[in-house]
Length: 369
Image (spheres, rainbow, N blue to C red):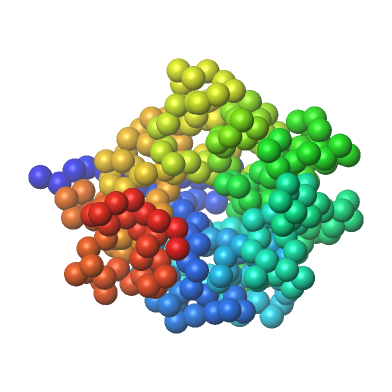
């Protein structure tokens, strides 16, 4: 007998009045398969056309805002008007699937790959101990804030329904928040208030783009990772302080990215509670929450949304392995949802070969390419 996951297909109206058709979201996926200049390749086109049909929100991943921030071999770009045709094509494909298209705005900071940079020099809040990345000047910081704004403007012009500011993982924005990567003593570092100044300034300037355009329907999201490893990595203390500031802004969602949706707090807050529970409490209904982390089947999504800690459940690897995932969830057919890549079915996945190591197979967990 099929499971009943009808609650996942109830619409949800965001705080700006935009109604999302259901509670499922495609998490931002770095596809590594764009053309070298960031334009849409045949592999990317094939992937987009065959993944995400029937989802409510679709976040296209790691859209580069600055040439100096490229971390991956191939990345989508929002650097100039020359990028508009490819941005528009992604929008058209996602809309054809029935989903709402959101572009994730990205900069790698000290994790930018020197092989792909114009001057081969990654930059971040502070120079790295090994000397491979240098410290951003105040002028460069101010310039980067405006580049996020310009990228948001380009995505709006291309027809995206919104943008997601990438403040998750180990990349530029959280690099400013973490003591492990920010050793500045000026107004961009030192106190937690100063450490949060850059990511909040980026968010504020993206919001200003929306205000100036008069587009109330434009969706603005912010993605975070609650905790980092290492003695000086981000803890729930910093995350909850950041969340309290982020939700003072008129954003439409907070996207929480972690290894497992249900993980408990490790440090910096009540370790008897889950990170998602504390974050949802801090949000206090001011915006929607999207939760991600090892959500694969309809039962996983149902459990996440039913927890009361999130309004949307997002998936990445499960989307890659199941091109018709939303349909299978709607029909309650968890028994047909793949958890591991089966080499005999590779053609049916519509995955670029570069992504194959990124999805788990029967021999072990996923490995980044």
